[in-house]
Length: 67
Image 1 (cartoon, one colour):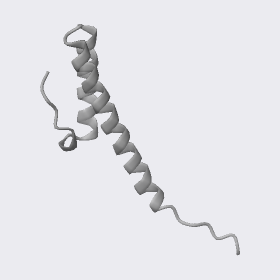
Image 2 (image 1 turned 30 degrees about the vertical axis):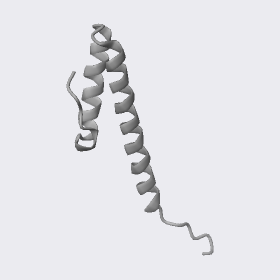
Image 3 (image 1 turned 90 degrees about the vertical axis):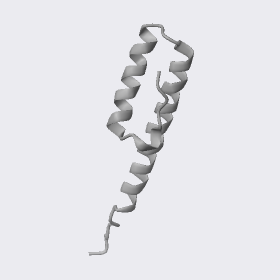
Image 4 (image 1 turned 180 degrees about the horizontal axis):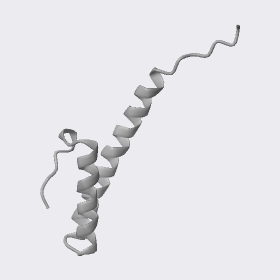
């Protein structure tokens, strides 16, 4: 399986690569190596989700209950 440069892949591309890796596990080709790649992809996706939600929470307006 090819080496992936995760920071340069989009979210959708990472999902596609993960799906390909899961198919490779089902075919039993280099299972341990492929599982490590899946773990790396999942970590990258989780990191991106965390950043996305952190940035989204910055733009939440404060509620004013005084009026």
